[in-house]
Amino acid sequence: MDNRHVVFVCTGNICRSPIAEYMLRDHMGEDSGWTVSSAGVMSGMGAPASVHAVQVMEEEGVDMHKHRSMPLSSDLIDLASVLVVMTGGHAEQIEHLFPEAREKVFLLTSFDENAVNRDIADPIGATIDVYRTVRDDILKAMPGLIAFLRELG
Image (cartoon, rainbow, N blue to C red; front, top):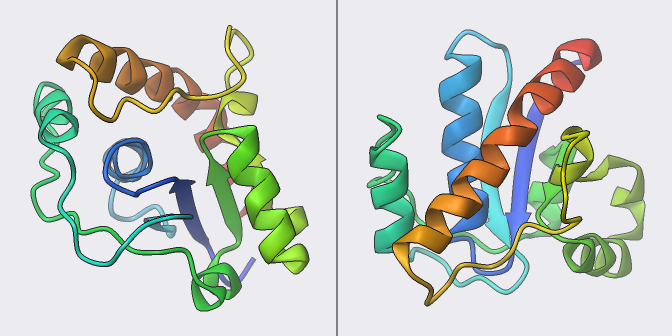
């Protein structure tokens, strides 16, 4: 595969998808051959990650202070070889707006065989403990996602 670009997608691109983006980048390492980014289906441009998202990632030794939100666009869809969504609703939105991307869309929890919930809950406005749960749910899917990406190329 020539183009190896993973795009994580959530709603506002300030909580879940940046956590997943920075986590995957940290776990795969800089020389993985994969580019990792994130975007939101209802995101504006340039908002920082939420304070709690930054804090729960700092607890894991990952700095997300540089993150700035970005809306999902047709250009980003074209760049992506894999689109990893946080909810089934995100998958439906992408498939409705960008039907050509259908084969690229994967639900994050599909990479965690022990996932209890299908969707990664939106923590916006919730307590730090809810953000920790979201971070940990995302973390549980990382080994399966990394194995899938390595298999792809």
